[in-house]
Image (cartoon, rainbow, N blue to C red):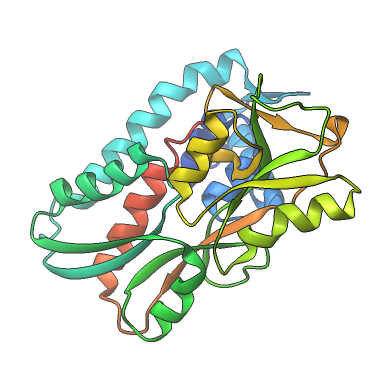
Length: 289
């Protein structure tokens, strides 16, 4: 196939390429883009066919860029950024008000990027943000006290996907308790799946445990785990560099993955909702994978 016969490369293919390159993993990329892994694979093959080169090497760790992929990376980012700027060139400034619900397990930098970044990009919009447990968000969206919410649950089948994320057992490498004894457990005391999941999973695995810390605050739960006082469950995105994920090798059962999605009220302002969803997606992509 010569260069005249090659199909044109659209920006959607480049965005998928950039997401795979950033995450290094097709599963993670599909979660970020809200598409199936097979659909992302088809897009990648289409891009590679169109360019006539291989862009990734599949390894046990995931997807590594080939030299051709490394060459394409900065150019693809430039093209996508310039297209975004062109789209906004003649757009009318957004005005109005939006109420958004955000999980309190979002990284602080992500929250800052969403709220401060959105405020800088759209100074004419008033944003009311609610950060907390997402179990009440579906009802808040249904009764229209929230325009938009990010909802998280293993059995979540509602809304547009933000990502699908692992739930992990988190501990410091040198806890203050005896790792050989009963599991010293930190519990998130909420009326949702987070409360009962760790105890039911340990009982199913035949592991003894003792609940030594309870809190309704996600940040307090993280603090107890970081201090080495207990083991707890966290979203994979909340695992700091000082924490390790405990696996079946250490006697900890696998946990269900959680699906995060966008729930939108029927009366939500469409243009503001679209802009806020884009801001949340962009901020979420900054999380370490």
